[in-house]
Image (cartoon, rainbow, N blue to C red; front, top):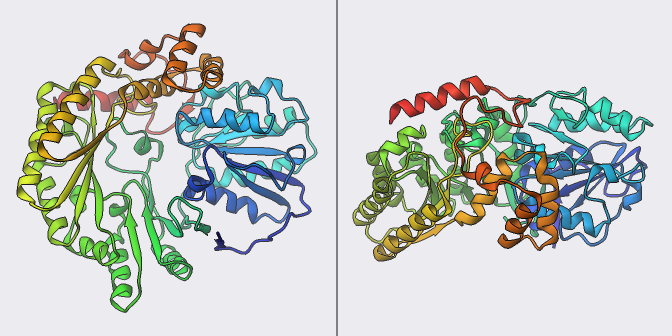
Length: 509
């Protein structure tokens, strides 16, 4: 097993003013494939007077003893990461709640999409939160930690930083949005990573499509592109270390130089280099022969495309403006260009969905298969989960019973077609919605869920014990006048604009 660092570092414990555990609420393999987490680690590791160590759920021993640690900074990416978080707390004998951690314990913070959107369920767990992009905040908060201050004094200093939320101190916070003046890339290439020995490059951040349900779009507005010259320099740097490269972004193909990137990679392959290039997904309206040619030359056999809904009516409603003709044309280009298959991602339980909309998913699948004999297609569906800071945050979920019925119907019909389909669990997605729209009353609930083993039954028992109205959080559609617990976070375009967008999308139906 090996790690290759793409920056100059001191490979030893430094004589440091600040000791940090860069913690990831998951296993090491996933941490080593998490670009945001690794980049924050790089920022800390390059500071001459900061000593940082990567800590994951499978870390059993540490170089820096916890009694010497000043800060544990957690990357928090998914709603159910709290289960892993508490497991790590137990391993290192850390009390779950911040009020139970005195000066003998390090400060503990969290950043990432979950807590940026809604930190309130976790406000009794963490000392503070990074709201938004964390690159600049990481440097600022570390400078504060260098001073000989008490926990309380540090937290009051942190509360003055843009993008830092300290429960009980600052009542309002503005999400930190960083201009992409440099290219973010994998600073540590490892064969231990889930994406083994892969160099990941952030091509852009955000998405201009802004589907009504998509928190990733709205949390990362405005869409920002990596500077052209820096991007190509970084790609060259990565290819000096490995032949595996992945382009990352919610809307990679929207980068003004995307075609040139593909052409550059293909040219190097044509000149004899062996390069494996991967895109996490590609927009249907961006599929072109030259792009597919570059992907197949780089060894990519399949790709993923998001259709979100089977009917054009619902796609327009969610702001996904792609027609059936565009979908069928994209598949033809992909097949003719040498790809072997496509996985389509979609969603069921979208607000205002009818049985006819569900049936149109099957109709579309039939057309794709009949027009592309021998081409491997599959489908994956999640169920709608209302997310903060989106136009659909007011909508409740469809009932578990209804979503289960729709899921069973789709599984049956896809089986008839001989098409593989995966559908997320309506029951687990129900609890994800509870976590997404919940407030600080969920702290004891989460701890109880963890203590009971973290299975579905544990969620039900904990909700009953603490009187959590889970149905209201998951399935109730709220009026626009509803005050959300996350309203104190200022994220553009803002609540009034989200209401107007909700109304606009509804007018399409």
